[in-house]
Image (tube, rainbow, N blue to C red; front, side, top):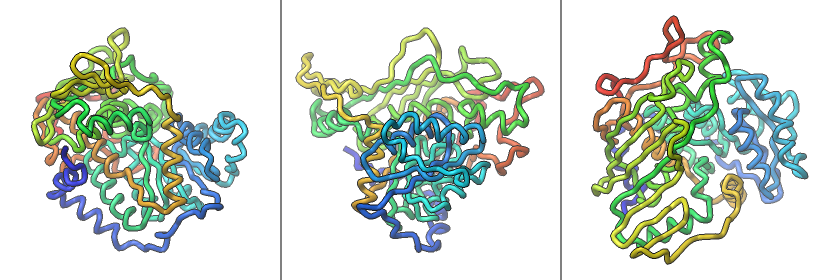
Length: 440
């Protein structure tokens, strides 16, 4: 098995930008290096991003048995921030008193993340649309905060490098970082992956993974009702690459990450195809509705990947591996050797969305080394590599992809600022075209 740490180092050897990012962060004050809540002290939590995932992450964190409270929240939209407190309380039952947010600790605007992070919290949950994640993570690390950040952790290569640079500084400061790839905290996955890495099906030759489904929510804000282009895209964030990374990043990262986990490394190249076959209305922005990618690891092993957002088709959210001795349905916790089924994990286990927060808080209290940022960044980069391949129609090398200077992010964050992609007079956005679109 390839060592994941050495693989990551190999990818970063030629990344001058990543090195520069680390250097830029390294000189910062380390006054907050020892922010560790004591055993009997309350872990004060701040939440950045009050949408559906932020609401869920806050609820999951507060559902643990740890002494913790949600004390501060922030969002760019007042309506989202306004309803979060009661929504989280309503899902906590007898733990509702863990929500202690007061009106003066509800922050709004594109700089709300700074105000939350600087409001006296110990741990910050980052749950905005993914495009903002590198900026928010870097600021939290500079401020000496422990972090739980949702996946993916970026939407472009410069963002991934920014996260990797900040992750290095977080380790130097002794900060704990969790990433919302909850399968790493799910009992069935942990047991199945351990058995595979111990040779349960011999040498693994091929991986398959899928996130095929009908799709997600329709854009809530109509084109004719928008106050500005920036507001329109942020409200409908899933359908714009700078905000979501396309659904190959926003959803399918879970499946790609599992295969990387079993393999113990990350792909070195990819090729693929995709497009917009069904979800073609201009309200769906610029992303594809299907991707197929063939990833290659450094020993020639392949991972075949599908993700699709098309109704009335075959659906699957699973991961599989084929070895010299048998096969495994990783997501189903079933190992089959010689046509039989000698092993299956049947224990339901604890809710992994809660377990990942419990594990992070336990590490904070024990002051144990704990960082999921590097793997989160490189599994995010795996997803981005796949998108680069489908959008361009070319074979893309991981090293070139990771070092790409193509940024998807706006140069300014304000409601009257220009997003990086613009619609024509009819509200239609340019769609990536294989053979024409430049990915690296």
